[in-house]
Amino acid sequence: MTTDENDLSLEMRSLLSRFAHIKSDPLKKALVYWLSLCSEERLPELRDFNPAPLLDYAEHTWLVRRTEDGADYDYIEAGHDISSPSANTLPGRTLAEATAPDAFPRVKRYFDRTLDTPCITHVTGQLYSERSEPARGERLMMPVLEDGTPRYILGITVHNLALDGAFRNAPNRQVLTHTPIFSGPSSVTIRAL
Image (tube, rainbow, N blue to C red; front, side):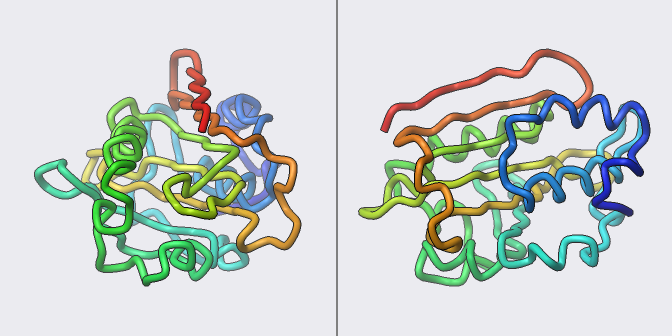
């Protein structure tokens, strides 16, 4: 598929216009690729993905799968820049293991919302806020189906810990935007930190 928005269907270009607030190129390219795999009223299946269009951004990408009981998420893949803030490799670990205990319920809620709505979740501002030195940047989370059920999240995160000088002026707060895929208005949550 493609990372060129001109190759998208008219319906998907219309949906793309709802994401003008995304600032970083890797997130924009990942979103265009994800949209290129969508069809009318259908999210992409995991089997639809070919990692080649995202190789330039591999260090920023990650993939999680919701556990069968829905209580957690397993990291399947995570690029170097995603694993580095946690000081451990993420594949093979769960979200609960990789997240501070006091932050886990909040983080899991927006992971769940991404799959349950389903919606695209965009986070900007402070990231890894439970750390003594949090990062600033952007994160995009896109739902992916497994046999017709939203079960995976394809994510891409860029932050100032990985990009010298980037996001220096990002707000010292977190702004979450949840945009339903096929219908409904976006909702925005601003969380002071």
